Length: 97
Image (cartoon, rainbow, N blue to C red; front, side, top):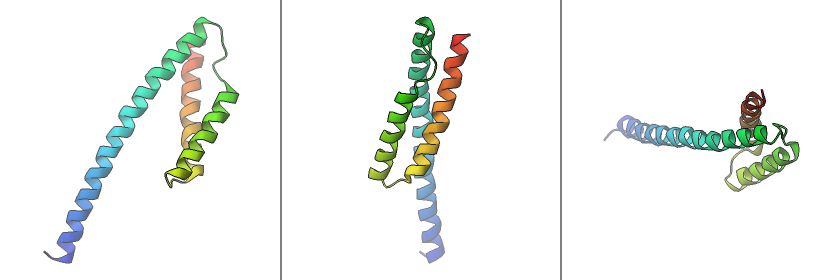
């Protein structure tokens, strides 16, 4: 097998792994949002604020720590979680109205 053919085979394997991991990410996010939507409905039923800054700060610290353990850029992990949290709060605010 030529070097180019080996490289193409490795590229195909890496891309297949990436595709599987992308599917895992999507299904994991969907499951996470099912739970956060339940939290949002519970908060609305009990007139609780849609945002919990103390909890959000704890989660960001926790995710940054996990990122470092996993050898992932903690800044990226923080940005990602902030994006997810913003979307969760948006959902929670919709339940409040």
